[in-house]
Length: 135
Image: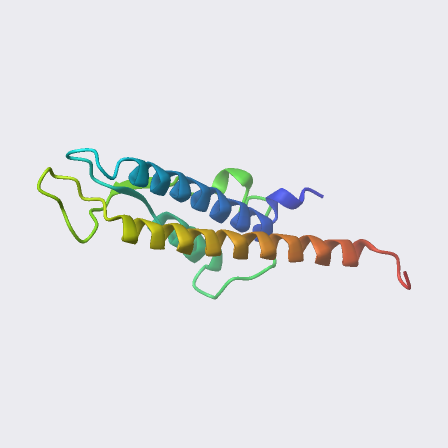
């Protein structure tokens, strides 16, 4: 059994990949906070939300896999990068506000830690289910 291709672990892996890319973009934004004309970039989260909606099929997320074609590893959403100006733009055209970028970095870190915790819990449940009775 390949755990990476199960719906639960596949969705978590896709989410963690998206959060990793977002953290990298935030770091680039912070590094370019004084670059004239620089506009901050972020990951468009709509791709992951569409993946969740497709997985739910309008009925809510289910752990049942009814077809080998459901939620394969290549079903991960492509993380689309969008240019999203912060609340202020300086005279030289730079639109990075460090406080907003730091808040996004903290939010992304908390979401990543939550994803890792869910992944670990999922592995613990699989180990528990695979253990012989009475052990």
